[in-house]
Image (cartoon, rainbow, N blue to C red; front, top):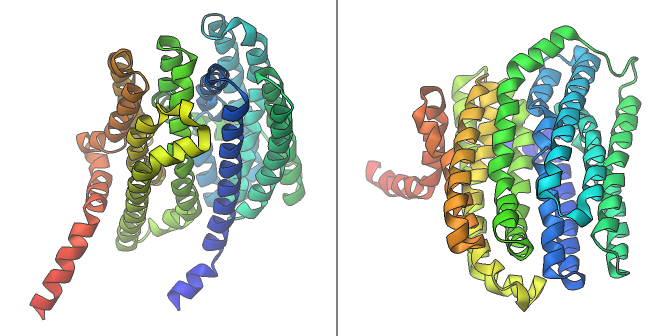
Length: 437
């Protein structure tokens, strides 16, 4: 009966919509990337992925570390929704604007001359990402069906446009212009949908008190977000700088096949986050729930990594062609980083529930430092394979090993350790049961 009740619950419905949306968009995005490898040269694919990696480095400034904090505040104080969203929106816009100006200056040294102006256009369009904060209103109210339908409908339509353009011979510039339009269209859609569902006026409001709360709690997460995106995306940027576009193409395709699975932990944890906040009041229930979620995430990732390691040679050749052979070994290394990324998804929510956001900076900062150092050392020696090893080691350091260093995070480190050996504990438990009888 409990299982039936779960499958009929809002949490399961919410997770199902999110998962369906992520699978559809991620799958269609992978299809688009496959199409690019068939119509563009390796160098063009590398340049395209290099620009997207550079833009990804700005994402912490358009979120300002507020995403999960906003969701938490909306769950705990729903009557302050206009002030929470309006204040978060202003803070995010300011952060994105500052980052845009700094990136425009750095673009003179990092961006190829032929792509400089399109990069500036994308920087302007990225300001619209600030409006994506509205998504957390629907997450807090367990109404992700709305968000899923919005993202899927716009995402699929714009992807079809880009597919048609590529088939008809369009290059990088045309595709990226459509991408800029897509980002702005999402912002307009988020505002419209929110105003429709939130009937009272005003839909947005400014609150100085709320701003102080966000900044006091969020600045650790802002710095953490910067460190996080460094160790998540700096590998492609450093590869492009040290090895050239071809190396970026091989590595980016491997990381895409590896990271395509990262949608699962995000969906699972996002849907369970409101219930974890409430379970915090009951220590025993809370601890058991954390362990079960971590076990699920850990062994889901290990299963995926095992399968991908074995099928990588055939998969890469069938999807991208024999000229992308160097992608195989990179993928076989990189995919194992998912074990720690899956468990990290739970840790990221746990530190907010425990109200210890500064440890997000500690873990991400440690990972970023390790990743940059290892990339400087391994890329000249091993190229893309070195970057993959740097990613795996830095993910393990940031999402697991560093948690043992601080007393407040050791509880989660122990939960992760138990998850890593969960099958062994299960076997021991099964063997011991008959003996106790």
